[in-house]
Image (tube, rainbow, N blue to C red; front, side, top):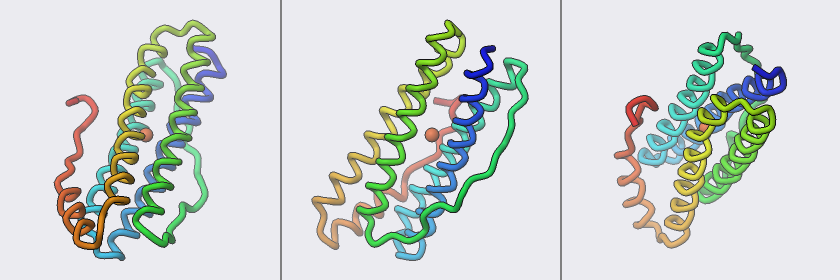
Length: 166
Ligand SMILES: [Fe+2]
């Protein structure tokens, strides 16, 4: 496998773990706000990010490449509103999308067809991720206090779906 591509995939899997950390901090903001549905929803988001990292790790392992795990800085723990958390999340996902697209550009460049095929899953997943947060932002913007309570109840029903079962 191309050295630069390996390095960038390794970097991305660490960024997925960092994303998990970002959402874990948000989960705990909601716990503190007694919004149990949002808390649960962000815990699922956290689990998804770990699964995204694991999927990258498995891929590199399958290609005979040793993964390197790195550290990262503290995530943001303080927020002023539900909307602020959701907008920070959407921005974060836009950054992830940019990075996945960059990985795809490299894979195409070096004609690594297996990696192109592998990355397609993430390209599709990012459309979903951005849509999830955009929709939540739209919903929260339309809500009054009682509506937020109802939305919180609804978010409590999100389930974690393991990647290989999708
Ligand atoms: Fe992700």
